[in-house]
Amino acid sequence: MPLTRKHSPIKWRAIFAESIFIGASILFAFALQDWDEDKDIEQRTMIALCNVKSELTFNKVLLKNDFIPRQQGMLSLAESAIVELQAQSETKTQLSQFQEMLLSEPLRYSAWTLAGESGYLVYANFELATEIGALIDYQEDSYKMIVQRMNNTIIDLKILEDKPPLKRFVVLTEMINEWIIQTKYLENKYDDLFQRKDFIALTCE
Image 1 (cartoon, helix red, strand yellow):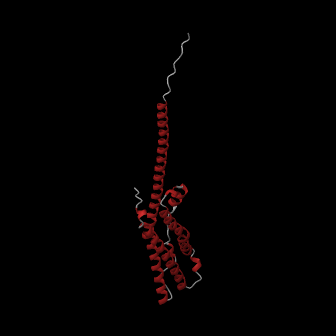
Image 2 (cartoon, helix red, strand yellow):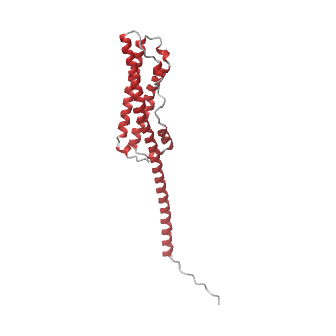
Image 3 (cartoon, helix red, strand yellow):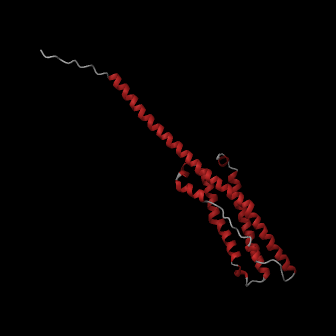
């Protein structure tokens, strides 16, 4: 008589428990991966914003310690020449003296450009990013133009050669004053940004 093999009963509970464990493990692994990715994005976004903050800090110092003193020096020089020419027909001030006071260090914005190209700005504080973007846009679209006009006028002094001496310095004074007004406006925008709580909260090493 042939032997019959007894089949062990299927342990459904164990299989069900093991399936739940495997499923939970998979879900946990995906959640952990997502958390790591979110953490990585957060860190990279912070690095990008800290680079921007560092660059803006450089610009703010440059405006205060370089641009403004140069403007005041140029204005003083031009106004002195005007006073001399109004009192007499000659002045000791030479147009070449203004060339020695030209700007050599431009305001920077490369960190902001790189942050935008990296794509991490979409994860940044929207209001803060908007304010920074507005400042950079003004700096590059409007302020940069007055600086270039000022530099070009001083470099190419032949433009003023045909004008009477007094008129030359009046024209220069008007341009310098326009530059000073634009600089003051830009400096105020920097001050407003640096006083924002969300900007101050960017704790960068």
